[in-house]
Length: 448
Ligand SMILES: [Zn+2]
Image 1 (cartoon, rainbow, N blue to C red):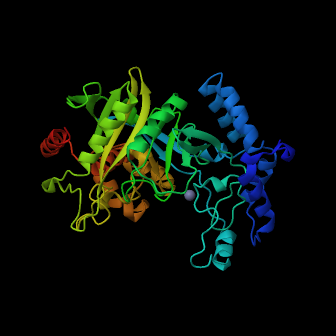
Image 2: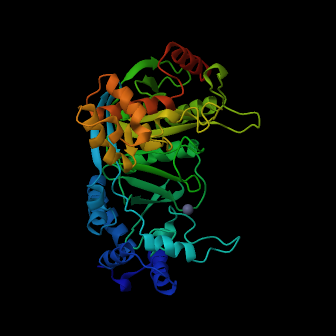
Image 3: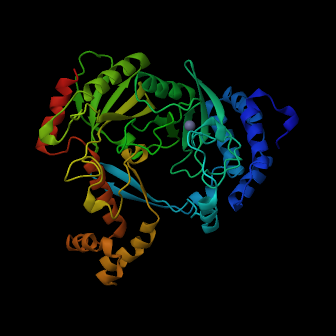
């Protein structure tokens, strides 16, 4: 239990937030805020947890994360009960088994809270909100308000990455086992560069039993928060990590690094080696070259007429027998008249299933689908089995359902798996047809 008398300088943010909870004028307090605050009072101070974490780390990194993760579940920061409601199923695609989650864990917003938000005072122009964003360190112990989630029971472990200070926490509504978020202690924008590749590999030295990755640093082809530098990770082997190499690439400048093209709907180059510095240099060369590579006949354009950069990489790092693996996923966020939401983004005819960005987690083969699909699955199953008419399905799904049935599909889950596979193929820059392979060979030549 928190003992305020033991507090030290590392508890400064937490203690300031406790005082804020009392002094800020809350017009409407949610059940979640009260529940989180109650659990907070039963949770040790941030400094006590950090000390215990690093004490257990001496035994093993896994002992440290086991302690911290269990604590964050026990104090209800990780909402295990809500997460258990998610529907999960698998689909055997030509790229291996994909994982599909229908997200039912995030609570619906309380209508009274929505009303309170409408009448609440807005920050004056030029005034910065506190915390600046949901990924700032100032969230540790923050009580929350109508437009910012409750974080009373959040605890963050300080981590040194090279010369930088970072924070390590778990995600409250996890999509996979021990879903981790790494936060820069500074509120600075995301940037995929040499530093980011280095940090991902350093994280593997820190927690070798986890994988780590990052969204890109440009819109459409990445995550939802570009304004705060962060990575994600966890204790899960994603489908993409199990996908095989179909072709090896001779990367002449880096003979110690093995490079291969992965059998995956998106374009993935897999780098493997024991030397972190060589891996980072090789990844930087591929990133630099990708930012210069265009192939207009395949709608691949690094820069537009205004000089805006449209190419980026989604990197994923994990340990292997030979040392480290860095999977680099090539991304392009151009739009066109035909695809106003993105050329390499789920295409319009699939928006009835998913229209959101294909971020890090989905890139790796774990679909996160909206809750509305939960009611669709049984309805679609009844229709595909001949027990219900097409009219029983929501209208936006009908053309697809009809086509799916005509194609002989009998399983609703498999029909959703087919469409998720096609969504990932939409997001792939070099397709698996002859033109696409030719294009990828051209890039592999260019990156040398
Ligand atoms: Zn921030």
